[in-house]
Length: 199
Image 1 (cartoon, helix red, strand yellow):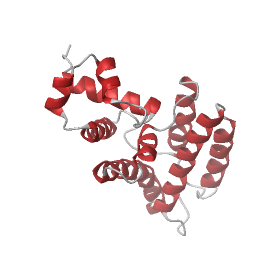
Image 2 (tube, helix red, strand yellow; image 1 turned 180 degrees about the vertical axis):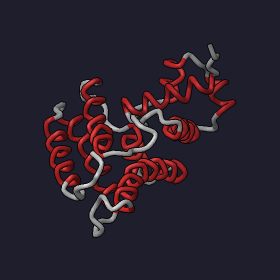
Image 3 (cartoon, one colour; image 1 turned 90 degrees about the horizontal axis):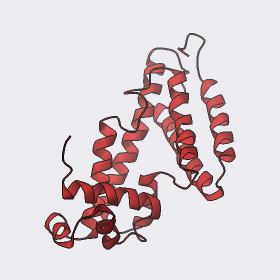
């Protein structure tokens, strides 16, 4: 079994704590205590807390690109699109609606600080939107979806529903508004299909 380095422990722990508590409520000392690492190790790998935030975002991006947060390498059918979108409510139920999106949580706390981290968070969101847009592009190019629709705009629609739904479910500790929004979104999206579209 691969030995986890002190840096990896700090980064993975920081991402978990940022997700749970936000970056302002997470101190470097809290990260070190939970990860079982020391201040000298932190100073060796990171200049400051901003450096740790960047490393946590970069770690998330690496895992995302490896497929860790997606049920499929790419979305190929409408059924897979539905599984992808509903997967967020299932995940949130498993954590008792105590968490929302880790990158959304970090981005919210960043405000206008740390431009590098904001840029990296934007790249992560953009990759996720493109993951969805690629499916709509393929459907449209194959004549299985109406031509007067912009795939990127549809992906923005999907991802905004997901992000807003995660925040609402966390705030209310209740999935019903999120599920209602997903149901309505999927009805609309499926209305854009043509008859020969793959299900």
